[in-house]
Image 1 (tube, rainbow, N blue to C red):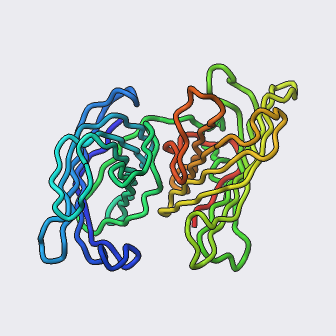
Image 2: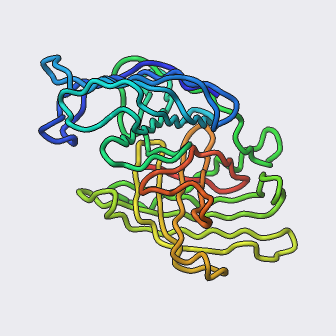
Amino acid sequence: MQVKGKAGGVLGEEWGPDFAGDPVSFEVDARGDDPLNPIGTFHVVHRNPDGSLVADFSGKVSSLYAVDEVGIVTGTIDRAEHPGVPLEFVGKEIALTVYDGGRKGDRIGWVWGFFGAPVSRVQGTAPHFPVTWGNFSVRGDAGQQSSSSAGSSPSSERVELKSGATGTNVLAVLGGTSKTPEFSGDPLRFTVAARIALGDNALQVKGSFHVTHHKPDGRVVADFQGRITCLAVGVPVGVATGVVTKSADPALVGKPVSFSLKDGRTDRLGWLWGFSSTDEPITDCQSITPFYAPDWGGLVVR
């Protein structure tokens, strides 16, 4: 896996009067076969419109997971200069989500630990920022492939939003068989639907999810559903987090979950369950890289 490149742009009005119009740049060089043991570095520069420095920081990569054209990189800052931000930077974690959209289609999203945001390994938010110069290259692993036969691509069947849908929306109705060795061949089904109305923010999302996992003979392994609590979108990638409200196993009620959705060349869904104390913490609007290519159904990120 590899995420590499240097690119940037100018922050828009949505960043408020303190940051709107500021140029920012991101440089990443991360590679490895093991998501938890990559090598590489990152470098971020944020300036005022007059060229004066807001922050310039760099560090070493601590995790990397890339599938297809999406990669998430986390790291730890080991050098920083930040006259415009009176906070501690060195030793803080960061996360970068990079989308390789080809010529003039690259995007990046970020989570800054120095602002108090939690950062978990191989997790990031949606790539919300479209870069206007430079280039990112993402070379991912194969992810979990569809079981469909060659020449057939049921995973790309379109799922449509309701006519006239506005705001920010994600919708996934898909499934297939598990590719995880422990559950190989088990039927899975996922439904995720969430919407942010025009003018609302990520935490004002309305939506729900339902996940089922059976054995081939029909025995229930898991059946749980709940409400979406946070949604972040950087088209064509969305990240949703939620909480279980109903489950065949009552012990799961109240537990957090996260989903990532990629509406791309191959539709993919990713997920993380916060069901045990040994799982990586799940944070609002953060998840893993989308990795699962369904055997049937599809998804939409708008």
